[in-house]
Length: 296
Image (cartoon, rainbow, N blue to C red; front, side, top):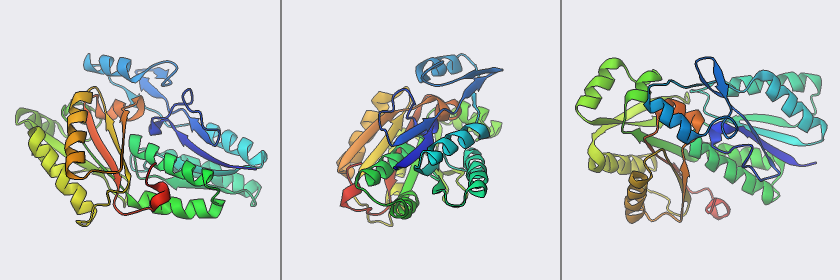
């Protein structure tokens, strides 16, 4: 018997690249018109972004109920305990669907050990949460201990991101036509975060140009840490087709904060379908999670 961590490709971990035997990754499809694509098999982010720039609109579809039910049931019948960690419930219904599958299985066997956790996060933030949870499994934490610590990990994580092209947020309904038009005309970039109460994305500030954007993100990091930024941690970054801008941003972050470790990951299809290819994001813990998790 072992503890299995299950997530989906919103974490930017693909089934084809996953090498951890304690992790199972379910594919969340992306769609254009009536065609469904599985990232890493039918399409990759680079191709999707190229087609989006030509005007093609991509959307995402959640993992089907039967995939959750069958995957959970297989692992439980094999004697494993399950922790499923979803994309933020405010941007997708995967948390609700996985919870339905969990409840149906518990009605069949109340002795199953299965929990469904809302990450309140996206892309590399979910990657960070997954990696920390897997570290706890490696450290031989019990099922209950992992669940309790995972609550702390999720509570502490903060998500901040911005984009330079407002077109894709407008297409996805995150901005009105007026906001998009005025923002583009004035070169104004929205700075967004994931709200911990409802898991939704909200604009928390606006900036003009790289310098002002960085200064506002820097101040927001300090605010979310109540002025006491814990630098003994691994900070995750996510970028689209703007790696050079991301590198410059990371250099400034490290110059000001000098975090213990930096992980930089390219944007995948699931979140990229909504944000577009020009994303800069940072994911960090607002307080110390302990030395054992500081390097993951």
